[in-house]
Length: 376
Ligand code: NAD
Image (cartoon, rainbow, N blue to C red; front, side, top):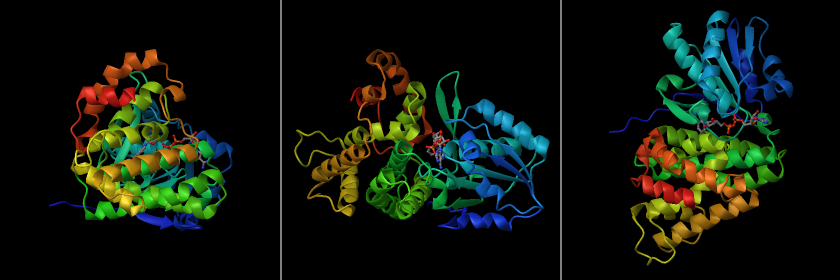
């Protein structure tokens, strides 16, 4: 028996930010990053908050937030005596705020603080997940915290907030969405409900990510990608993820590559590995996971007369999408020197096998398998 819950209330579409006008008499602790303040985007919050509220703004979140910032935030939150947390920003701001809420609950006895997440990138799905990814900058590692206490009570998905995302971040975060959905679809915990969410998200990425990338003001494409990100988040919150994320958490931290970009680099190779796909094999030599990838290929209208062809079509379609988004194809193109890769390979392989996401991968990897994927 599986228990599947969707706990977060969603306010979606243009005008969704107006939900904020309904909160009154609160002490609101706002967590965000410096860009949201400097760009003036924060005014979209201030303009809507009723004057009976008091607010404190904690705005020093950096990408891949380190544990020290979380600790600082917990202290500020306690000193302000917040009775509500509002996170506005990309996955980094939302994850940091989620970790602050978790630790504040434990340290300051402030459980049940209402938590509102307002994503300004379309990528992580963090607004609906029980995950928060925190970095240890000394050890160069990222670790996912997992707890239902991390689930936001409300999420506001307003496409106006993502119009300003530059094209390369649109590409990186969009590929994060695709990776979430594909990993959810082949996870050992996949089920009919998560399949439906993941399949829809995958179709939306292929239809709308190139449009959002080429023209950031295309509000329809922005809205669809924002919703796709949330759908993929709902899917992987039910199924967890897989080896792609297991490797990306470790390698992204070691090589300082943005999370979505690192996922995108790995995706074609992890699919080939999971399906046991090799161009020279016969058509029946792929494994059962290949049939799942072929289902995805079919749903995208790609050629998939058998499992092997389906895997090949899916990999080709992903590579084509990456090309349209002008994304790097190799670690070398991301500026990683071969010597550094050789230095780090064994540690990454070891770390990837220990990462919580790898546990639900459809094929059980060895360190040698991970090393081979990295070599590609
Ligand atoms: P991010 O939050 O790190 O932001 C990337 C950059 O985009 C920052 O410089 C930020 O200032 C900028 N930015 C954000 N919104 C913008 C806007 N509207 N316009 C212009 N610039 C904007 O990036 P992200 O990809 O959203 O989040 C990545 C983090 O989330 C990583 O730490 C990753 O590990 C984590 N993550 C968490 C989950 C989860 O379930 N909690 C899932 C996947 C990834």
